[in-house]
Length: 211
Ligand SMILES: Nc1ncnc2c1ncn2[C@@H]1O[C@H](COP(=O)(O)OP(=O)(O)OP(=O)(O)O)[C@@H](O)[C@H]1O
Ligand SMILES: O=P(O)(O)OC[C@H]1O[C@H](OP(=O)(O)OP(=O)(O)O)[C@H](O)[C@@H]1O
Image (cartoon, rainbow, N blue to C red; front, side, top):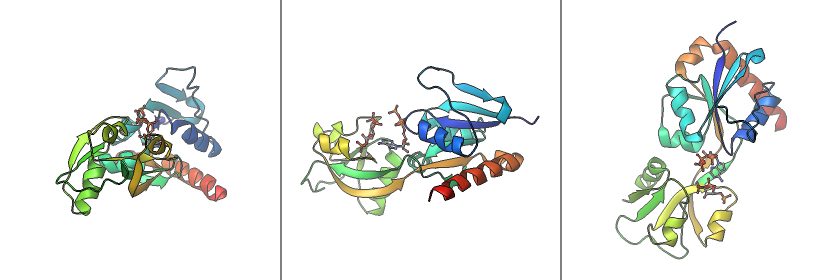
């Protein structure tokens, strides 16, 4: 049998939707996330190996060929700009990236401070707007930054809008819509084209059927 197709799956909030979509496409790759701490799961009957990765790291595994394919949020792809093929919009885990802050606070001062875990996305956006900014890099709880005066604005993911609302923040501009994407290592795309194209076509069929 040929070498297994290795898939880097994102742990966390994307995982269940991604595994469910894979299942509908005929790939039973589910891990019991409540029970298991295993990071590599073998599915020999399907000739597939699954790596459980942090969502931000999926692109790294795929770029270096540690995984042939992976599932990553478009936010991560925009931020990291890596050498991988983005082959399919899976339309799962929808959310968007937005600029938010305290209400009624015009961006008046020179080089306002922008707190974010997406420094590239934020810099690209404000450069396009012709605004000079200072990035304050954070890893989470970004909404804290304007509340305590650390930043004038945040650039962060919004889904239900609940986090902004409960912290008295408002959205100023939407930057871009986000969904999860299927990504492929360029070399694997050539060497394992049959398996990869089959997976892309099965996933596309499932998604077509749901429209
Ligand atoms: N409300 C949301 N907040 C953050 N990410 C979301 C949201 N809804 C969908 N996503 C998608 O989920 C991905 C992040 O998943 P998750 O929150 O599990 O990872 P993480 O941010 O690395 O987790 P952690 O909070 O453990 O560091 C994002 O890349 C994005 O594409
Ligand atoms: O619009 P909502 O539905 O409220 O979702 C948006 C929030 O969810 C994410 O945070 P996460 O839960 O990943 O925690 P974090 O702050 O530690 O990144 C994101 O960074 C926002 O804070």
